[in-house]
Length: 288
Image (cartoon, rainbow, N blue to C red; front, side, top):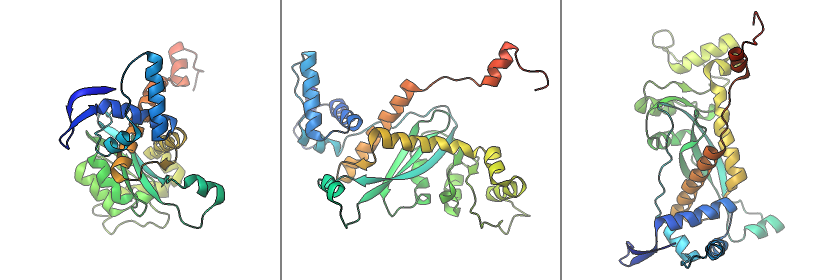
């Protein structure tokens, strides 16, 4: 775990490499450990391996997590179909256990995690962590700035039915269709006859086919993939943020994203549609 000769920005030498710190923080995220528990786990692993290496203490993990650089997730095929959504993450303070046991009258502190998922791979390609007061639509620009590559389409729920969302997507990816359900009381724009917008096209399709028909025709149902990513995040990583400082929280989110993407790479199934398989085997019923 230790590395010699690496210089710390403060002027001294860094005893542990970035890879060593990232590995420790990854184990902490996966097993939901406290920093002292992480220190003990790594020491036990090194002892079992028979390696005489120094183990970063919990103070070092906290300090290095503030400025640790985590590589961006790799994107899949380009252009990608982008799915966006958000969820809340509570801040886990030192009194969290007492609050769970005895209750509290104070509102818990929490933050919003905004995710963008590649529809082809199901992996998270970028994320933004904001305060709880930041709404979904205001973070579209930041999410798009974090995407390396072109975007084929942008899909979100009704919270993204805003003029500024359409403007942000059009400014960066003008050819990407925006698949967002208009509100129930939405009306066509004043230029529907002379210069119809994409939102007007959604309203016309909903009027002709109904909302369920529009969802099937537009591909809106693929948005379930980003909801699945949020569910995986809550089940694997948890529904809270353990660090108390912004820089360390950002690092925890980046490492959690990397962990979930790697798990998906290891366990993603290869599938084939039953109808296609029957067609290849020549067993499709005549007339169907």
